[in-house]
Amino acid sequence: MNGTRTPLLDVAGLRKVYRSSGTLALDKITLDVRRGEFVSIVGPSGCGKTTLLKTICGLLHPSAGSVTLNGARVTTPPPEMVLVFQDYARSLFPWLTVAGNVAFPLRKKRLAPDARARVIDDALDAVGLSTFAKHYPWQLSGGMQQRVAIARAIAFRPEILLLDEPFASVDALTRADLEDLTLRLRAELGITMLLVTHDIDEAVYLSDRVFVLSTPPSHVVREVAIPLGQPRDQERTRSDARFLALRNELHHLIGRRRESPAPPLAEAVR
Amino acid sequence: MKQRRAALGLATVAALLVAWEVLARAAHSIYVPPVTTIAATFAHEWFSPQFVQQAVPSLIRMFCGYLLAAALGVGIGVLIGAYRPLCRTVDPVLQFLRAIPPTALIPVGILLIGIGDAMKILVIALGAFWPILVNAADGARGVDRERLDTARIFGLSPLATLLTVTFPSALPGVFAGLRTGLSIAFIMIVVSEMIGSTDGLGYTILQDQRTFAIPEMYSGIALLALLGYTLNAGFVALERRVLAWHHGQSARPT
Image (cartoon, rainbow over all chains, first blue to last red; front, side, top):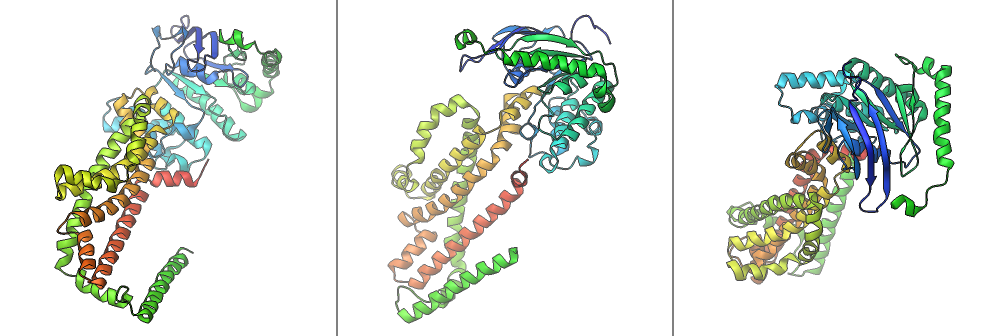
């Protein structure tokens, strides 16, 4: 891994005020993601996690602060970054087949037909859906649909994948499968991962580092390193004493935050 | 199950026709001839060159007007729906214009361009245009935020997004509008031909009524019913093909 000193993604003092309501959603969020790292952001529900990811990937403009990717300021979605949404049913295109969805991000990249077919095959293969290329997304289970969304994202060949609670709407077993799939993609393809989740166990299981957010207006409460080594294993890692200690620490951080009274409105809006 | 329902439908139609036949024969009114008389008239009226002389001009006008309305309505509608500021600006005007009964535009059409084919095509197009436009705009406006964001993330230009994301998303709305537009176009062709014409189905039916050719008049109406039914059935078949993904998706909510 080169350039471990300078982070791949640098978020500095990010602030987001919703123009329509004047609500301060994010308040001076500072975090960084190094190349090849798996970083999670956890926080209580309603702490503006989706807003944060949308601002990081350039879909929303920050009210203050900056996002820097590979040393370049992010103002519109950069080609090195892809966001995977929580709601696969909304983000996938129901009029396209699975292969058609995966081919969608290739429209901009002028590829020869065989190279294009290879990229699609590889992406579907990576998520274990090669045999479902001709199906439509809505013919598949929720977990499989989210795999299609992930395949579509990696077909774009991003350096970093932003994941917005991608496993929130699937059952527990599927969830574990998808978690391990992301770990594998990160190891095999070297894609840096930035995950947003409200599931503390998931954050600890997957991550090298976890940033804990407060209730809105959100800021980073604590950065916690997760020195559990690689590879992770659903049974072994989750029963590791260090895992339990880390998840308790994070629970404590988030729980205490939630109990503290919300700031008065005037202060929040400012 | 499906066959039983179809059989039941056919039986209902047959029962109604028999009832008409019996009642008409009992009543002996020249204004309501029996079904068998109408059927016989239908055969010699419409399996004849008359079909080409009267029905074909009607259908050609209708298709010209309808296709014009479809092309403009879908194109402008999707554009309006895709750009929210534009949508807010023009919406009151659209709501006002669509409230005008399209038949009221026929005198305007006659005034501006006379009673020729152009007038009929224009009023058909105007009648079908508004429901197509409004539904296409609604469909385009309802596109999921996540889909538009996905297109932006993958670097698509606004035009490419409009064509590959907004337009397919709007298709269910577009088809709802096209279907309403089709039935309005069908009404408009008959009315416009009754007002100023020397051929066409509307003209023929009115002429038959004025010359007391009563069974002929009914056979013309029957032909309209058959044409309308066929057009609608064809439209539904097309929609089922194009929107297979939409129906499949709505059949299994996740």
